[in-house]
Length: 293
Image (cartoon, rainbow, N blue to C red; front, top):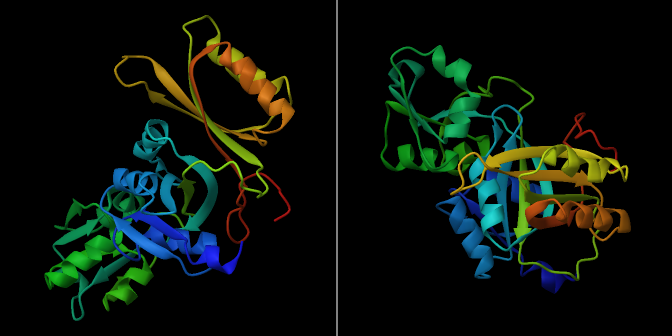
């Protein structure tokens, strides 16, 4: 990519500056990007659709707390393409105003996912209330602006540094192997030349016997590895479901196209969310796929 194109990169994310989503975006590009904070996940998708941002980045899965279902729903609702993924190691920290101590804390603010990831630490605290907020870094900003000495936030060390706050306790997540998977989304572009090794789709099936078995068989018959399958309720149709599926392969490959054509025979909704490069986990961890990176 030419340097002039690099300057145009802007990434929308949910949260305040130094939210984990923004950190994930900087990790993905390994270069400066123009960050566009958004209040809600919906706003990220709208910013990309309106071309206010070149890309959006959204979390879809955490290794401790599971899927972020709202973003799976938004992938179906919006006509955007997944063009990349990245895994960020999440280290949660208890952050306070300068001079505050643990025995002063009466309330802790953070995103619901962060609170859940620190359940053991929080349950050991006595007479401390937890309050869910829209963002981790935004929680730090709030207690900073309000100068709350009896409150703390759970967020990244970068958020603490950016807002000139103190870290009272480091890495308070329940388990050290805490990773979040983020997806990079953009307006569909068929001219991309990057290596695409992984594909995500979403579909719902006809009400026929053995439908799910038949759906998965279209991939098994062609030796296509399935990496993940996730079911979600189909809105407006009680007890019917849609399935999000990741498989190893590029949608432009003949075997993958044949599998999709076969799948169309037993589905009522089928949407290709995108083909994109596989990203391995940082350090000594990996996603189970050795792509030589």
